[in-house]
Image 1 (cartoon, rainbow, N blue to C red):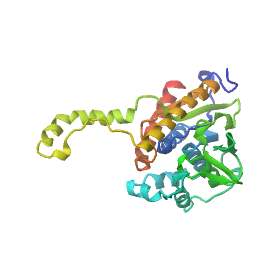
Image 2: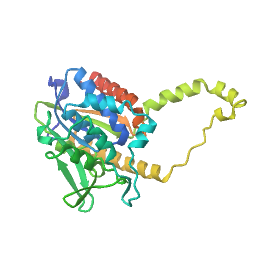
Image 3: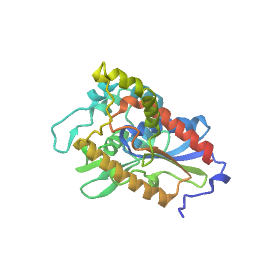
Length: 297
């Protein structure tokens, strides 16, 4: 049994040690998880994150989640594309600097030790095959390193060490959140191998209007219903492979530490760069968190 596990039913604690998983754009749903916790009267006393979980957690710990939410929810597809500073590097096709430089316009860099809430971000030293934890020093340096998706974003080089996405080695860094016996240990996992509730709603709507679409397709061929499976691109194959790997590692971590509450969201709710769907992802995270609080605590 994990030393962190307690009888949640007998716990009246409103203090939360929060762990946010990796997951690309899916990690935006962590914002909704945080908002739901605060709306229900919980206080987040420490936070740890990996990759996008580190970004959301770090911004929250800096006290500027509202500004970040407003910015990311106003990104459309073209805005997201413009933030991808493409490069011909063999280590990744995106430099990854533009998005963080844009964030610095409304969120000032600061030392992690000065944040409002104790925070830790995880990255991977890919050459020496080890975990690197950022719990002090530059916030942006930590976030950039933790979010460097292999083969997509160029590695972050710090003191000559090449660092990539923390999700490679520790997608749910429970072991780096500050815990006490009075905390509830809450994990938000957006890499779960579960049915995609968000897409089920879309399928239901599509099926409702399917007869009409099929009739119209005779007049307007561009509206024809096409259910033929789409073949995955090389990038999609790699992304799905990483997702599957993180899913399995996440399950092992959760089984080992047995958190008090795990919010599970499907890894199929969106792809890596669908940040233009941030508003609906946040609402999904908030819904899942509130359902869990109602059903589990």
